[in-house]
Length: 637
View 1: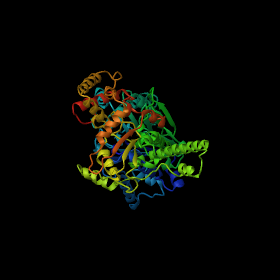
View 2: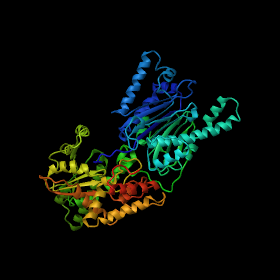
View 3: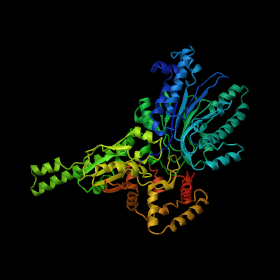
View 4: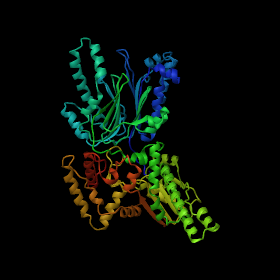
């Protein structure tokens, strides 16, 4: 993705299923779980750099001793900072003679982060901002073990204000700090009620309070709690948590918008946002890592039993396609093939745009995250060329013209040419992020491989997606123009991004999308700017309707225009004015059918089509247009 878009958070959870001694004997360290948590989080660092947090829960600690610990940071390099701090804490305990690594009991007693259950979170700040208070995991404390709750998640809700009002009506005093706080209090409220209900029943059957507490710990079902707490949630979410009774749990929204995966074997129950980090961290095959089913709570009881509870259902599955296009790590076996398919599906259109002659075209990718799609594009181009050679040989044979010269022309020439045309200067980008307004420096974020493209060549570069078009105009097209090619073609593996996201991606302001800007520009060119006001009035009327009855009025803005018309206008908007080069530029976007064909199991496409998976999405998109028309900045939910 050439435009820098921040996105979802990352979650990680590990629940050990054996005593700490087991891991010392088998793996040489009683801190095996602690080390795996760090590795699991490090392998998901792509999902958040604004902050990190970890929490641990120790089982069967004596009364009077703490058993839940938490550490968070919002400073630079927060993940490594946390684990360096905890490692120093451990070293101090070893030097004091309290901890002996070969004796797990000393680790559990004197090192806070040696326990049986632990979770971690990598944060990208949205609603809650960037303060430490907004950093996960969240911790709701109580003297009753069954009322202690630790929670971390990857999500956005569209109706947080309404949920806060519901908490007020319950008699609570919620802090309007983040949507995570809202979920914590919502789950905590029903957890308290369930705990109290069970206490009244069991206390009538058992005289010993310790037996009462033990039965509550064994019988309390977090799945039922989530089912009650989530009835009015609207959004995309994947959450992990721990209850003081010893339970660890994970659950996911009923549409499957946000990703969540788990590994369960005789040694460990582990959860992460992505599959590949689990495969790497625990050295397992892809068949051993399963997806948390949408609308399902996975609960690992203190006893070690794994329970599944369906807490909500949906008629459609809408897993986020952007996860597959860009956000998730590309080393997942399925994602790798899907990205190659996205690149390959653009081949025919790119050949036509480049003039149909492979000898006068150079193919590359920019930025580096588009590399896998580039491989898929090159595979398809070569397949097409092989078919051309085959047909040429057959035709020459039929005409009696099949000689050595013909074979040389067909076989030895005209093959697709790929080059590493652009190089990203990471250090320069880091410097620029600290100094705004340096457009000249921004244009040099990328450099080129001089001499790889000639003046008679069409230069084709593949990108993951084009959101705002800013980087294209200020940097990429300027730097590529130094080749002086006859034409520059930028191909996006994603369709035109037309609508805001409200489920975890930083794409909430409608006016910042280059596709929307192009549509507005076309309306104004036609002299029909009054129509923009009509859509504004429609949106105002729409948001007054009950959820579930709203439609997406912003679709009216795009309805008269073809995708090709919008692409042509986007090209005009992003093409920079240059003194040294005035060649042709063309932008080509993926079409929706090819997107779905490439990502058959991830059909969440609301940012492309405007078809939202939850009722709250339609309220968000209409509010986004209202904000645009009223010239208000900020997200619309």
